[in-house]
Length: 169
Length: 233
Picture 1 (tube, rainbow over the protein chains, first blue to last red):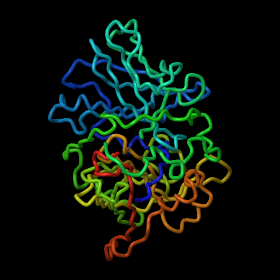
Picture 2 (picture 1 turned 30 degrees about the vertical axis):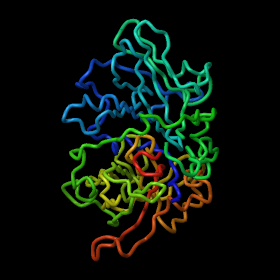
Picture 3 (picture 1 turned 135 degrees about the vertical axis):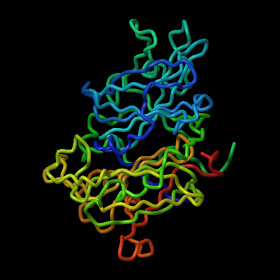
Picture 4 (picture 1 turned 180 degrees about the horizontal axis):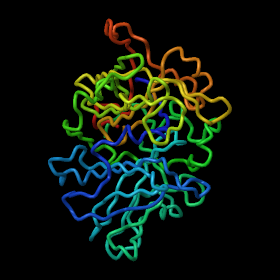
């Protein structure tokens, strides 16, 4: 067995280094999309303006247009006061899930999480059994009253309402 | 299902603890709950397929991305990306970014009083080859001060972002240079368990040098996954 390479922080100065053609911007994803927006917070409730979210939705790969450079993948930074936005399919009869990795100054390891958008008429979405019942709300987006195609979801790195992060065996 | 040695999802003898008090920024940002462990599912095992159009040959040469040559010591940084079985991780996206020779990033947030180099942006990317190999040409980054503690300086480093072939192989890390006296004082480097730290230090390799042009450093990277990549996570 080869020894794994350890993780290190992304640091504060990644932005210009990682802005290729895979930023999260509205475009034709091949299916009707909804916007997910929110803020990354630290333990003190302060927004984190130097985080990077990477959103992975393999279900979108088959709908990707020929010009897509990294199909199914979006990058969203938080330089606007800790806020981010990205796009996921609008849920219908089924819930929608997106896989999100969070990097930031102060995070020595990338953090894997997920966001779930409940199916139409539902208040929650199916999640793995291992997610504790009292922390499931941290993975649920809620529809914005005023902008029905916008969903709200915050990431709390530490403290009250700490977002559930995953490891994969 | 594949069988084999017990899989370690994010081994504590390799990776830093999220909360590493000497690196002050972890205090309010490191999650305190243990990660919820799941079996890698379809999404985590999905192949991340990069369009070849994402990269151009010039992306791998950070000394030729401007109208003139950047200042500093030209270097080659090269190695292989492997999985835990030593198999090459092929056609995978590798990104790097770094400060210039004076220790300044081309980034609006970097206020270090050192000159910007108009000919150096400090970013590169490429796809690994059939043997997992990669090769960048760049300049040696400088050390720079930060405010983590009194008289704190980051050792020279190049940031590496690796996609692997599968979503769950994603890794961001930093490559250091051999013999750097600042490593002994750097809380980010020292956040890694002692037995694993040297894996982040590149090796000087005369065979990688380009005579009259550039010195060479070798940095091999091992991503998680074994038992027949890309399905053996």
